[in-house]
Image 1 (cartoon, rainbow, N blue to C red):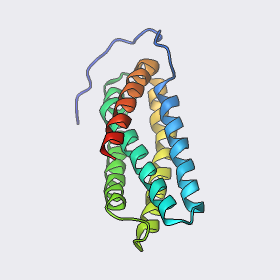
Image 2: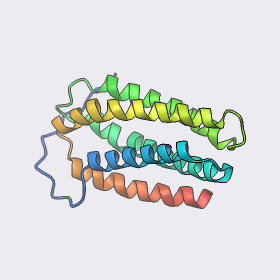
Image 3: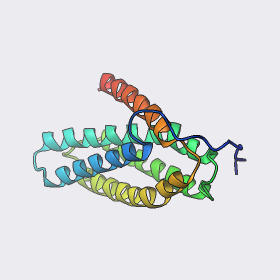
Image 4: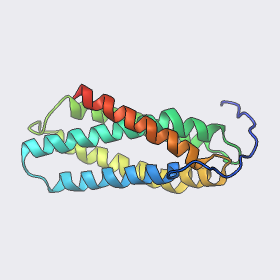
Length: 168
């Protein structure tokens, strides 16, 4: 188990912009809406397009959490025992990434495509519920500067979306 570094409690942030928690919640809501749209979609090309959007949104979201939010939260003071929660979140991300790879390697005419999207949606809903109740609660109680982390997360997210758009 990594040793936490002691950090002084920071002053309230002067950073403009939303909290990291607001940004992550917005991502959760956006991808949930995409899953809902997918369930109502009939055409193969529309399903392929929505699935690609879902996968890209989740890849960006997971990467910014893993690169920025989770490490910062692990190092923050006042989080209680957040390591177990974050370890579980990392495992959930790994499972989602495997399904994303399977979805990206197939198409809507594959007989398992809809099932993969459904299971991915279930993984995401479970992850979101735990993250928003337990991990966000720990973040609010911690010494973490939520707006400063939010600013860095937003910038990295924008960069990743540009990178993924070039790859498409």
